[in-house]
Amino acid sequence: MQEFMRMCVECNPGETEFLQAVSEVAESVKPVLDRHPEYRKAKILERMVEPERLISFRVPWVDDGGEVQVNRGYRIQMNGAIGPYKGGFRFHPSVNASILKFLAFEQVYKNALTTLPMGGGKGGANFDPKGKSDLEVMRFCQSFMNELFRHLGPNTDVPAGDIGVGAREIGYLFGAYKKLKNEFTGVLTGKRREWGGSLIRPEATGYGSVYFAAEMLATRDQTLEGKVCLVSGSGNVAQFTVEKLIEMGARAVTLSDSSGYIFDEKGIDRAKLDYVMHLKNVERGRIKEYADRYPEAVYTPRDPSADFNPLWNYKADCAFPSATQNEINAKDAANLVNNGVYVVSEGANMPTVPEGVDLFLEHKILYGPGKAANAGGVSVSGLEMSQNSLRMSWTREEVDGHLHRIMKDIHKACVEAAESYGTPGNYVSGANIAGFEKVARAMLDQGVI
Ligand code: GLU
Image (cartoon, rainbow, N blue to C red):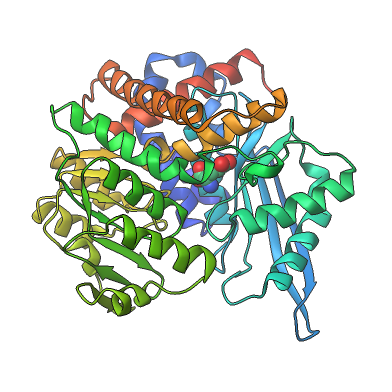
């Protein structure tokens, strides 16, 4: 394993996030490789860390002032062993090859866990939709698709949204693809309902992460009723996490964005959540305005020089990190544990640093890693693909029923894999092993290719 990691570091210099994700999986699957020498012989892990295809391209566009802008676009087709590449686009200034490779790598195992036939991919650009006009976003999306359309297709690669890519961006991207290919196909998911989207897709990641937390709590004969919950982020994942928490009788007390966070001890109720949804989705405003509207809430601006995030430093039962990677550092993780938090369900991808993960495992808290806990989003994307292929659309109840069952199945698969490899209660090794085994078997079946 040391030799394997040394090789990874050498081949992917400076790609810290990618190496972080690889090292966690490699550590978890070591016992699988010991039990299955055929995987080692076929160099399954070595093949898995090398993207099947990495596309990087220039995205030129013209801003509202008439000035030419240039961004860098990517699509990483990581692994297609069990289905077409599937995974979102992220538009954010932090986007680079390392971030997208880590996300694509995580996506492979996450998608395998969903029980649906989807390979793993990820893409995006270092473009910041924040502060851009609708027309600028449209021009950017059209230029992005101008290159990428040739690499996509409903049986080849089906992107979706991620940070900075919601229904508006998916609409512009879909329009451009349709025009260039002259065909109307389910090439993207997260579409609006009226033209091929699935009910429950916007809700899916947040709902799924709460369903996963409920499953973890059930192993200790507990429910979410009355639990105090810390939620980070205020985008689609955080919003629907809070919605499901309200429905389950829990009390969500925080939300954040890149400028700061609010703490509302009384809890974010339905009316307040409706306000947040309008603020964020329609007005594209900042979470600070929540505290102006509801004086019982306290707003704290982000302090870039602080070595911990005070959002994670309140007495609570559960935490739902739903913002971005590495948002819980080692100190935050210690604060959570010291404040009595014993359930962490990750709505974001890899939001906890490795030292934090170790601490959670050491304290035997119910810790659901992103690739299991946030798999609800891509699961409903898979259901959107099925509906598009059938040219049908299912009801809310049908889709939510599938989502709930899938989250229960993922939980069960994690528990069983962890038990089978001698790490009971460890959802990190459970998720990595269960996802890995499915993809590894498919790769073995399909030969060295
Ligand atoms: N971006 C989401 C994720 O991280 C969803 C991907 C999809 O729906 O394809 O899983």
